[in-house]
Amino acid sequence: MNAPTGNAAARLGAPLHSRRRPAWQRLDSGQLMLIAVAGLGVLGAVTQVAAVGLAQARVAVAFGVLIALGELFRMVMPGNREVAPVATAGAVGYALLVGVGPGGGGQVVGPLGVVPAEHSWLQVVAVTAAGMLVGSLPHVAVGRSPRLDATARRLITVGIVAVSFRPLVSLDLGWPVLLAAMGVVVVASCCADVVIAAMIRAEAVRARFGIALRDEIHAKAPLCAATSATAMLIAVATTFLGTAALLVFTAPILVTQFAFRRYAGIRATYLQTVRALSRVTEVGGYVETGHSRRVSRLAVAMGRELGMAEGPLLELEYAALMHDIGQLSLGDPIPGGATVLASPAEQRRIAELGAEVIRQTGVLDRVAHIVRLSSHPYRSAAPGDGSGVRPVPPPLASRIIKVANAYDDLVGDSADRDRGAAVLERLRLDSASEYDPTVVEALNRVVDRRPRY
Image 1: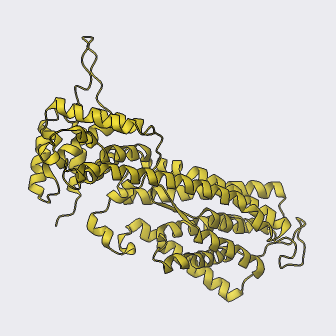
Image 2: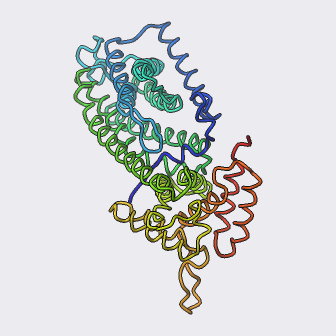
Image 3: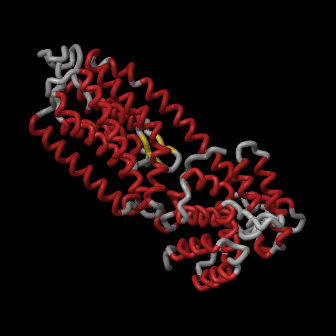
């Protein structure tokens, strides 16, 4: 299974009680700083535009409407990433606009043979902010407030393009130079967006910056490429054909957005299906209520602690949710569902049967492999062959699930920290052969970060 993204990791960093607070109270310091910078920029831009007036109002309104429509149809990608590709393409296109085309609101033809675009970078920021606000109002009306950090990041990205490119429009440059400048500017803005997103994500989910950066590049690169290409197309087409070109040349990004929305829907359906399957063992009384969910949260947090990327983390979440599904084959349930108390042979049988059930889906073969090896001891995963070659340990995801499952089997939903400390000590004592000591210490750090009630 190629499962590149997931949203469980983004939820793990915050304790349960924090997710009941208003959205703005859940923002970390980096997100608040990002929002403050964007807010100050918008305030300055709106003040300036109000003082000098709106240049070429027809064009500004046309792009503002496009941005508003793009915000109205924004979507959430896997990994809880809010994106608005149509709005971003429209805003960046407005920042890159060289001329306004026939009937665009100007009369004097510039050196490039078109009516020059007269708006400043401050007007680009102001129009973008206004379009985002108008497009967000229907969402706010139905209780779906926009992600303030994502909105701020989009505004800052557009601002970078506008500040870098608008001064070039007034210079007597040829089209080859301007097109090259457009390409350089949009690539730089994409890189800045990815770096900012990685910094925010690394702080939010306690991930290493390098891992977060790799995840953001993997998640954003295709959409960023499509958005940037469409923005340049919009800018050039509108320069020569007028604002009517917006209707024609926005089509490519609309098709791309539809494809990404379907992709996000498929990933969400996978996760919902896996969660439903994981509850079968709870409903049947084979495991304690909430066991699979708790193991999944612990496992993903430990995976983050150990530097796993987002794709493997999603597979880890799937496997952790379904690691006990093999218990459905048992005639007599294990008391409390605690497989850690069962014999090694019984643990392996449960894991093998669970892996076979998962394999039957046809799309979760790697998850099945993780579940199959989650019952294997750390230092004796393969029988010795007399060659002196050290046996290969199970995959990291399997080792994580083994530790997380053992911890929850013995602690459950108890908030007693002394009990948790005693279980951790027991796992450490078994680290010589049964549990990976590195994974046990990762669990210790994850548990230690839990809030004290």
